[in-house]
Amino acid sequence: MTLEEVYNKIEQNKDDSIDLLCELLKIPSIAAKETGGPEAIEFLSKYFEEAGFTYFLAETSGNPVFCAEMNVGADKTLLFYDHYDVQPEDPIDLWDSPPFEPTIREGKIFARGVSDNKGEIICRLQAIKAYNEVFGKPPVNIKFVIEGEEEVGSPNLEEFVNNNKKFINDADGCIWEFGGRDGDGIQEVYLGVKGILYLHLKTNTIGRDVHSGYTQFVNNAAYEMSWALASLKDRNDRILVPGFYDNIPEPSPEDMKIIEDFNLKENLFKENFGVDNFRLNLTG
Image (cartoon, rainbow, N blue to C red; front, top):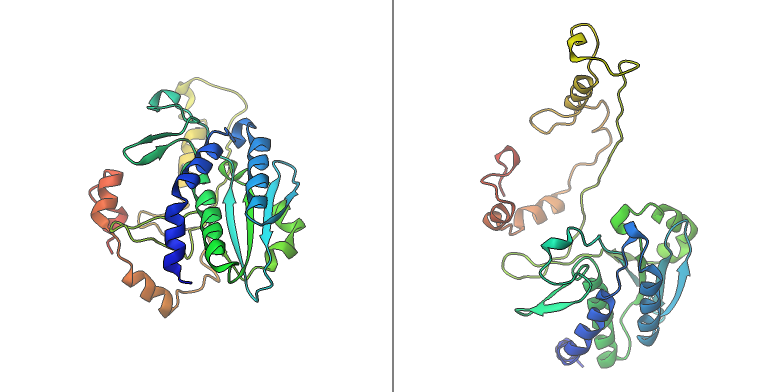
């Protein structure tokens, strides 16, 4: 038994995998519109159970989180994170085919959610299935956390984590939803992603709207806001908020070696984004 047999099994199951993916893609599970969630959960429940997983639904204040597990008594446990919700289909007039009617053109599937993130769900499920068909069972225990509100900012993921810490903490590692290829077609494994911080800012200078002729002695809220925003970061991308850089660890030599060895296809990125240069003329 070899991995080559697993790859062959994946190829043999290719048509079934495509059919399974297209079935999931037909479900309009749009969190922003509160549609399709129950149907997506029903789909996941059916096919994960058929693949040998046990599962439960973790209720939250919003959409439930689908949790599945294949415990084979191994020493290590691998957790996969995915989401069953997708972005809204708007603007609908830019689609060449209906977004929830999967269409294959030139060897590619076109539908909402095919790459973010339903394609990854099916790929992972079918890969595990193929491995088990060859080896009988996986070398590690496997868990899935598949939420239904990622595309609206995961507002209830913290609640889920707080209520299901044992299920998560039992895992020795987690693989995030994506897995792309570089410019040479080589598969990539993401070791981390940047964080995000967003704020709602509001400024109020006077009690009512006034004519622009009064700007010489009444503060303008638009200017006040622009000055506040300009105070956050300088032209060299340095954050100016006091204490922002406190306690941030420096990258290790191993981290820097990975970055230095990374094969970034700069020209492809520039062409894709329609730019001549990166910010601050960065390269490498």
